[in-house]
Length: 127
Image (cartoon, rainbow, N blue to C red; front, side):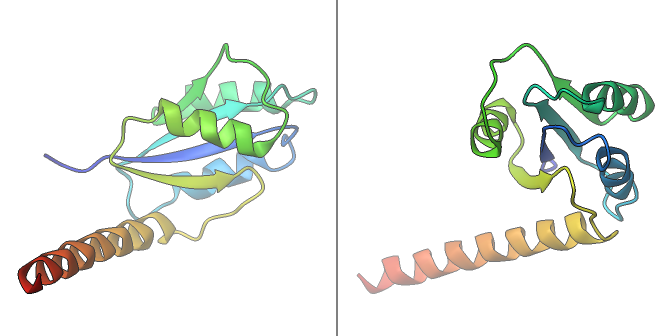
C-alpha cells in the first residue's frame, strides 16, 4: 500500500496569495498528494479563487459547510480531523513552497519514523 499525503491549507481573506500558493504546490516534484482547503469565512474573493482552483486541479478538495473558527488554530485543527492520509503537512495561504518541499519533507518523515522504530526496538531489547 502506498502512503498518502495531504496538504492542509487553511484560508481567510487570502485572495491575494492563494493562487500563487496552490500553483507552487502543483509544481512539486512529488505529485501524489491531495490539498484539503478550509476557508474560515473570508469576506474577500478567496472562496471564489479556491473553487476555481478546485475545478482546475483534481487534487484540490474544498471542505465546505462548517462553522467559523475565528482563527487559523481552529481551522487547522478542523483540517486534521478531515484528513484520512498517513501523512499531513500544514500550509499557510501566503506561503510559497519550493518545488521539492513535499518530497523532501515526506522523505524526512519516513526517515525519522524508521529511526524511531529502530530506537524503540533497541531500547526494548535492552530492558
